[in-house]
Every structure is written in structure tokens, then in C-alpha cells.
Length: 369
Image 1 (cartoon, rainbow, N blue to C red):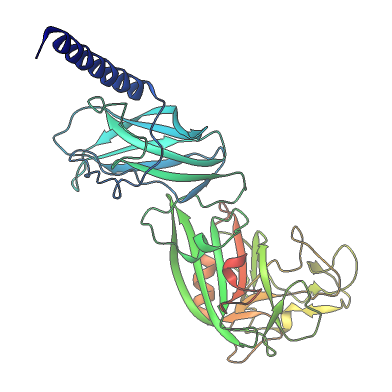
Image 2 (image 1 turned 180 degrees about the vertical axis):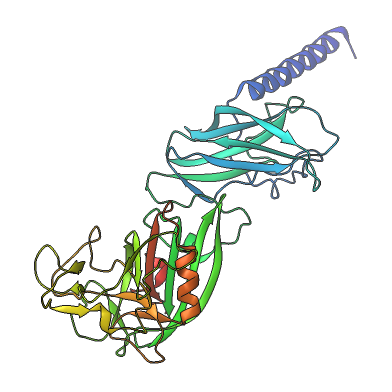
């Protein structure tokens, strides 16, 4: 090779090396790589950190917990970096130091996070030795949706959506009594009590129940006397009632003892669909006469304030003791179940009653609420 060719070859090599160095520098300076699935990209799971456990979705501005596993021998600090997509790239917006604990089951990191904007975020766990130039979505990152809606899912620790988490709306409940039936023609179904505890919706207990003698109908079209249980979702009142002169043991809500002066009004006016005291006849239900079914009872909140209240849609839709037959529109359960409901309802938690069907195409399907 003559001297001119050797010089041209050397120059070409120097140019290629400079170009490669520039590309590496540009890649390091780029905000972040596009979101990719770590499995598809062939990213191996981190030998130190586990993927962050986050909710499926969370309400804008609401704090939630993030937890994950960490190798017991690992002593570096764990940082959670929150990324949001901007102009096609994932930009780090917030970094939070996580605490590391070592319980008997193994070491875990945890932190409380609140995200300031609606949309999809990625939360990535990393240590001080982790390169910040890695893609936002790695083997130690998880996506989360932040919703501007006030009743988004708060947490879904085990990845299995329970019925309350499948519901579109829960009125921000922390205790739910959910009644389900196969169809609007059903005259029986299941009642299940759920409670939100430390990030999970737990099923506390369930029971068979009896419904209206003519089945169910949408609460928005129900009429007084049609013998149907209304479907819908309602905030429950802050009291229970019954035939016992002394508050039943374990009852935490306010308790009202039924006497001969107590009625549940169906009269038009400010007292419509409310508990009233009167020495005179009131159009509605004279509660003292229902010695068995109203031994333990509570209002579902249907068609009663603070829920929407429309005269003529029916009053006195209760959860009460099962008499062995269908009802005029209430939900009835065995006596022991009502006693358990009394002991479970918590005045410090927002309590909501839900009735719905299970048919795939039903407009009254329970998870559509």
C-alpha cells in the first residue's frame, strides 16, 4: 500500500471512531429510550431488586404505596424514579428515596408516592450503582395510570381484580355491601361484604339473600309497589335499627330502637323515605309491626338523601332479616348474617350499598357502577 492510501485509510478509521464516540455521547444525553416491554427486549430480571408493586390505576393527587423485594445482603439505597412521557420520550420527573426493611420473609423496599399529572407513568426502582442512562422501562419498572376521575382504583397488590376493583364507580367507599343476581328476573342472589384495608379490597363474608317477589329493575325506573328490588349504588345512612331496646352487642353504628311511634314515611314532602316519629298514622311502614324482619335492619340508601330522591320511586328499601320468602323490594338475609353486618359496619368508613346483575350484556351489570 502506498503512502497516500495509508493516509486515506487512517483518516477513515479516525472518522469512524469519532462518529461512534459522538453517537455514544448523544445516546447518553438523550432523555430516555422509548417504552419497551422488558421481556420483548430480552432484559433479564435484576438479581438485586424486584419489580415495583403499584396500583393498576390511582386518582390524581392521591398517595399510594410502592413496594418490592430487594436482596437481603444488598445495602445500597433504593430510589424510585417516576417517568412521564413527553414528546415521544420518557422523562424523569420525580425521584423518591425508598426505605429498606428486612422482615423474616425477606428484605423489601417501600415508599409512598403521589403523582401530579394524569396519564400513564412508569415507576422504576434503582440503586446508586444503577446506570441512569438505562431505559425507563426495565426489569425493575412498572407502568401505572393516573386518573383525573375521583374514584379510580387505589391499589391492587396481588394483581387479581376483585369485584370492587372491577366496578367503574364505588362512590369512594371503604366498606361495600354488594348484592348480585343472575338476571333481572332473579328473586334470590348473593350478598357480599367488602372492606378496604391497607391497600386491598378484602371480602369479609357473603350470604345467600332473597330479593323482590317480581325480581329486579333499574332503580331509576322503579315505581312504588312494583315488588322489585332496585339496582344501583347508594351511600348508606349512619344508623341501623331494630326491635331490641338495647343496642346489640358489637354494633358500632348509631342504633335506633323501634317503638310504636316510629314509621318509615312514604308521604310526599321533606320526610319522604325517612325514619319519622309520630303519634298519628303516617303513610308508609309502621316499623313496630315487623317484629321478625326488622329485628335487625338498615336502609340501603336507595332513593333517600343524600342520594338522589324522587317521590314515587319507592321508600323503605332495607337490608333485613330473612323470613324465608321473597320481599316487596328489600334484600333479606339470615338473622346471623344481619347480626354480623351490624358488628361489621364502621362509622369511620364510608359505607356504600350496591345491587346489580351478572349478565354479560345487562345494563344493570354490577361492575358497570
